[in-house]
Structure formats: structure tokens, C-alpha cells
Length: 224
Image 1 (cartoon, rainbow, N blue to C red):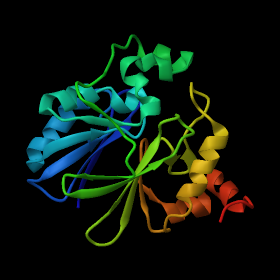
Image 2: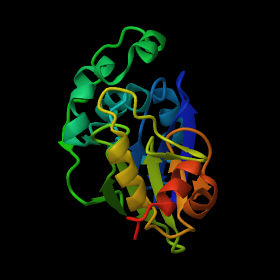
Image 3: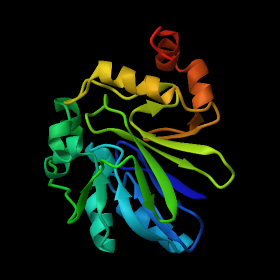
């Protein structure tokens, strides 16, 4: 499996390109602010052809270039229905502080948008499991893939980071929902490679042991 990742924009949100190998079809996950040129360069360098844009959630730092990338290649953008409105009104997902940083925002809605409701996507020769993980936003998801070597990758967006979790103080945030979503992620194997929406990669085992938000969930009596 080929995974290309890079941070983009003022918020340094991670964008990922995933394919079975060079010269193949790929999916583009979370093309955020100013990501279009870096995505184009990665596609050229590895001879990749995008077949879809996938959004872990609808915040503008993760989807600002969704329309630019999707429309340039004539492919759809997949996003949960709960976050669909954020493509038409990006400021609706930001609090006043972040809205000031982001500045005026035009709609970022691709020509083709597909509601992300299926539990599994078969795209670019990849089997992508989709887990709805509300909390950071109502439409947050985690994408899971199994590599050829048997390992599990989890693209967690802003649900889980190395050492932290997504904030819940923005419009649509829900601390109780995020706690439930984190308990669901705790059922994944320790060797699951976590590719978060910001910051560096980690493993679920490392987070289970050291992430204060996950250790609190591990101690909760309703975690099975």
C-alpha cells in the first residue's frame, strides 16, 4: 500500500493520498487549505489517478481544497450527511476565534457530493471501512484500511491525535459523543497505525497507554 501524507494550510491539517501502489488509482483524504498544488505534485510524482475525495469531517481546514481537487479530476467527494452543509457554509463549523483566523470563506462545495453512509467503500482497489465517530463534529468518521502486510491503518481526522483528541467546543461538538467514539476506537488492535488529521502518526497501543483521554476511557467501567 502506498500512503503519501503532508500538512497543508495555516492549520497544518494532514492530507493523505492512498493507493495500492505507484501508477494506480488513489483516494485523496482531507485536501485542506492550499492543498491543491501539493496534491497535484504528489499525483504526478507517483503517476496516481484520483477516483474520489474522502472527508473525515467537514471543517474547512480539512476540505478547503475538496472542490478544487474533485472537480479538476471529475470525481465525487464523500462526506457524512451531518457535515454536508459545511461545504456550502464553511464558517458554520468555526467558532469566532477560528473564523477570524480563517478570514472570509467562499463555499467549497464540489460538483459531485456523495453521502458517506455505507460502512465500507470499495475504491481504487482498496477496501475502506468507515466508522462514524461523532463528537468533534456530528459527521466525523474514521477510515480504516488493511495493508497488504496485514497491518491496520486508521485515518482518524480530528477524532484522535497523538497524545490528544479532537476539541468539542466548536459548533456541533459533543463531549459525550466523542467519549463514545473513543471507546469504539479502543476496540482496535494495539498495532493499528493511527494517521491523524494534525500532527504525526502514532499507534493505538501507544495512545491506549499514554494518551490521557484514552487512558480515562480505558478506566471507564462501560468499556468492554
